Length: 171
Length: 233
Image 1 (cartoon, one colour):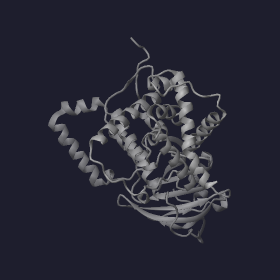
Image 2 (image 1 turned 180 degrees about the vertical axis):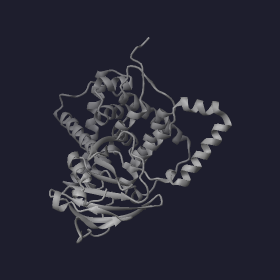
Image 3 (image 1 turned 135 degrees about the horizontal axis):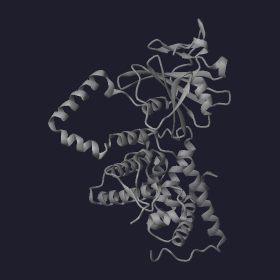
Image 4 (image 1 turned 30 degrees about the vertical axis):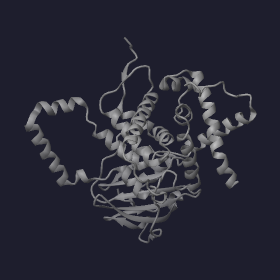
C-alpha cells in the first residue's frame, strides 16, 4: 500500500492557473482554445475527489490537461470543420494588452510549439512552459529523463529555427 | 518514440546555439504570459460550483422537502439581489480598459477628497499625502449596479485603479488574505500580475488593483487612509 497517497485539494487549483494556461496555449496554439482547454481540465479534475500517488499537483494537472487536449483533438477530427474566427475579432488579453509587442511574440512562440511533433512538444511544454524538473516531466509523460533531455534539446532548436524567418523580417 | 530520439547533435555549434535561442524565446514568452482575469473568474465560479459529495448525499436523503426549502432560500437571495452580485474579479476587469473620463478635480471644500463620488461616497485625493495623482476616471454598469473607477498614477509611473461599486457590498474571493488596518479588514489577493485590495466603505465594496511591483503596504496605506476622519468610511 502506498502511504503517500493524498487527495488533491481543489482550493489549491488557483495557484496553477497561469502555468496551465501557458501549457494549454502551447498545446493548442490559440488563446481561445487554451481558455476552453483549461476550463475543461478544471471540470474534469473537480468532477470527483482525486487521489494523487507519487505525484505533485502540477505534474498531475499537466497530465489531465494533456489527456483532455488529446480527447478534444480526437473529438474535433470527428466533427465537421468550422470556419475560424477572423484574427481581428481576437479577444483582448488584458494581461498583455499594455505590451502589444509582447503579445505578438508570445503568440508566435506558442504557435511554433503547438506545431512541433507531439513528443518534442510535450517535453518542451512540461519543462520550459510548465516548469517541471526533468524527473517530474519524465514521470508525468511516462518516459525516461534522458529521453526528456534529448527531446527538449531538439524542441528548443526547432522553435528557434521556426522563428528565424520572422526575426529576419523585423531586425 | 522510434525515429525521433536519435543521439542529439550536441557537438554541432549551430544546433547548440539554436537550442539556446529556443530556450530563451520560450522563457520570454512564458514570462510575458499570464491567464486572463476573465478565465480566472470563470474557473473560480467553476470551483465554487463544485459541491462536495457529502452535501449532495445530504440533499438526496432530505428528499423533496429539502429541495423545496432550498428553492425558497434561493428565491429569497435573488429577491435581495445577492445572486446578481458581481464578483471582485469582474469588478477588477471593468477597470482594465483604462480611463474614459478626465481626471476629477480636487474637492474645494475638503482637501482630502476629489469632486467625484458614487451614491454619495467620494473618492480620496491621494496626491497631497502619497503623491499618487488622479489621472482619469470611468463609469460602468455591472450586473445592474453602477461602478465608478478613478485611476491614480504614482510619481514613477505605476497606476492604480480604484473602483467603488454601487449597491451593497459583495463577497470577497476565497483565498484572499485579511489584513487589519484601524481595526477594519482589508482583503489582499494576487491575480494575473495584479495586486488587488478589497475593502468596505460605508457599506460599499471598494476594489483597488495595481501592478504587483507596487508594494502591498503602499496600497494598504492608501486604501485605509481616512485623513483624520475627512475621508468617510
